[in-house]
Amino acid sequence: MILLDNVLFGPAGYPEAAKGKIERVFEILREVGLDALEYAAVHGLRTSVEIAQKIGELADKNGITMSMHAAYYIQLASKSEDIRERSKERLKKALRFAPLMRVKRIVFHPGTHGGMPPDESYTVIRDAIQEVWEEAGPKGEGAVLAPEIAGKIGAFGSADEIIRLCSDLEGVIPTIDWAHLYARSQGRINNRESYSHILEMFENALEELFVDNMHFHVSGIIFTEAGERSHKPLGESWGPDILPLVELVSELGYKPTFISETPNPITGALYAKFLLEELEKTRQ
Ligand SMILES: [Zn+2]
Image 1 (cartoon, rainbow, N blue to C red):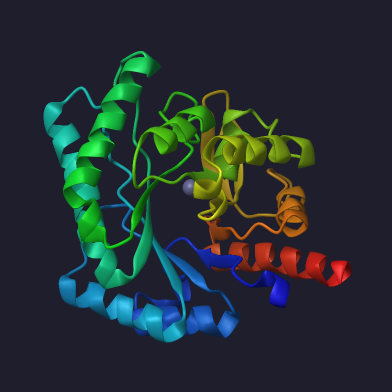
Image 2 (cartoon, rainbow, N blue to C red):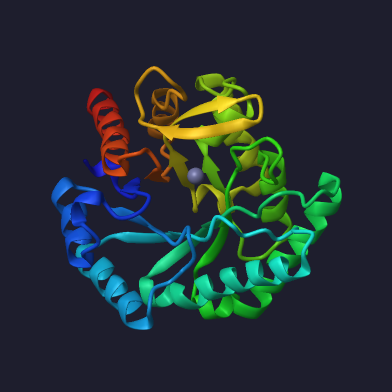
């Protein structure tokens, strides 16, 4: 078990069985042996200060490491100035609420390219994140922004774009969504060689910033030519196959947080944890 130390596993969003009861959420995580939770603010962060505080206290009490997934409809490069402003506001609000909820990573999708060539949208998105960070970064008390690899090929968020943001900006770490990479690559990023290539790319470019802050999303996924269509359970007929990824984590001693975005995220997180535990047993 010692080798699992600091590799964390948890669901994206509250477990359904908690029926929205916050105490129950944390009890369930403890009962099943998970240690992370990605709070889902995907339809906007609507919690009150009181509830945010309560979430933070329960996270502390139960030893749960918190992240937050910010709103899906963030569009930092939107054609509409109004939408760009509101998108930045959403990230600033997430940073302000982060300390109350003990959130250390705010995962988000920068959005589409807004009809611009990727190089132009890159500049717009980079400048928007920089503005968010300069204004609200210190209020996050250590929380960082964690832009995610996008599942739709047309969206901003290739591995290269995410790496570039993390290299150019303060307060930004990558979220690698392995299902999204699988969908973007039309199923090619699905084995030891391709996983290891991606990990090397991130590590070579970002060094400790990546290695010390590894944040992974895992799930099965169905994709089309445009990329992601829908998230699915792990370990079934659809890909990606996460076993070679978990093997690399185990062999290289990486300490990522695995957040499961499967339809039942608790089951997905437990499956990933089970794989790592079994691998560690055979290595001892
Ligand atoms: Zn994701």
